[in-house]
Image (cartoon, rainbow, N blue to C red; front, side):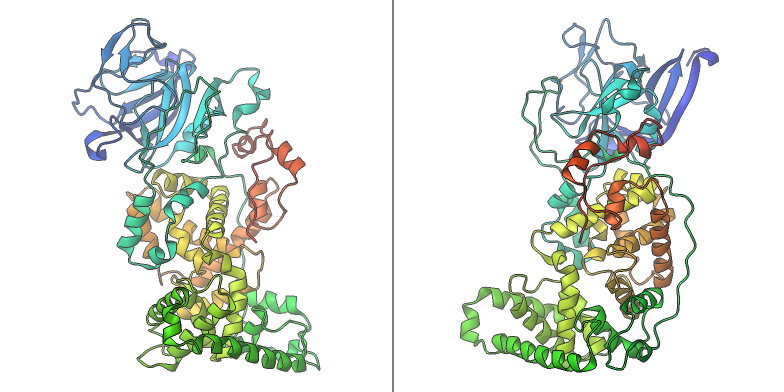
Length: 625
């Protein structure tokens, strides 16, 4: 480089950062692997990128003018591959009085941080996330893709020199200000970076028909999510120097690359207990359950012995109240039996001619008949043709359509009923246990899919706090939305574990211990168990999806439960746990309007980054009931 060693200091370096000379074309043709560095030259910090090796490309030097219109020779060979969003750019000029930027003779660049105007997260037609740097001359550098993650580490290193402020006209654009002696009190350092709201908008776009897609073959799932993650065709054009322009929809939510985890402390060791094997000892002389919380705790710790499930599940799922007597339960069963068969008669008595004029009922029946014929057919209770278990499965689901006609039947509900019917082996009891289960998860199946978006967002919040490095990697591979967890959350891992394991897992989750969202901690446990396979690998969006899909029947339930409880205790034990995480865990309610307004003035990101001057609040994320 020619500098005096004393004048050169390497602050940060990351390999595997690809520079794309045309983001619209194929990655293989236009991507150059290299290093991103932060260096100090004679005490002046600069951001640099250089290729991994000189591959003999004849690309022109990348030089940018400090100001538009100061003359200079046009270089029309550089095609950034996208429409710049806020700067009026059509060409790159070699300025006669350009900013002090290094000319490597190739695509390498060196940009003094004093000349860095903005950072932008963008996604082009390839579907990958890119970071676009723009100089104060109004010219973007070629997009950078962090193939193996590392964006958070880069931004943490930059944080010592610069302050980022979210643009008022573009939620994906972050303006750069120098960090000097007055920066400690400069509000916009990181407090306006809505780093934890990634997922909801993305999920809105990729989930059009999640049920059919999620339960279909892997190739269908892959193609579906890949297509859904493409950006809108229409290019967006704004001028960041004109704050009066109307705000545009924020298709790519927050610059969440800045998120990192808090110091959680060591993860405690936990142990599982024995299954609940004694039931009568918890009943008083009239049949009431003396200590429901003790029963739930035992179930959470070790599950339920198979011979007791038929009875205890009816309490866990609300068919019987915990304080009901034996006589009261007899009356409940009589009333509920009558009610069930009244509803069953409603659809049984519909003639073929009537059904021809009722497309909704006809559609429900068609879906149910199709799903019943492929639900748990390896289980002896549902195997073979003309199996009475299949008839019961069909009849209970059809009756549920009469019970909840607004929701009706949605693919996946047969997966929820099958284990219940297997355990109770009773049509009426299985129906009312299903309604209790659906009371917990019915929002998963609603057409708006708001609950699924919410849970994916909440899962992202938890994982960001637990393992920011894993989140960074997933985001770099277009998997930060955690869309591959959709099926897990929709039917509570029904397809991921063996039938027997699901009986245990569900009864643990039905206790609602240690929190209502324990199923999200189960998902975190599984994802963390795969971090070694994912991070540092050559996985991309498709292969990540394929890898997660292939975990089916390969997970050890007891290990997953142990890790999930340990994660909960680790989070609860953290004194500086972000408010969003507390809300997901049910440790606090949503903030009041006054608290929300106050929170917006402080910087949770600063605190997450370990900076002493950071704030302590965050943007509001409503908890999932």
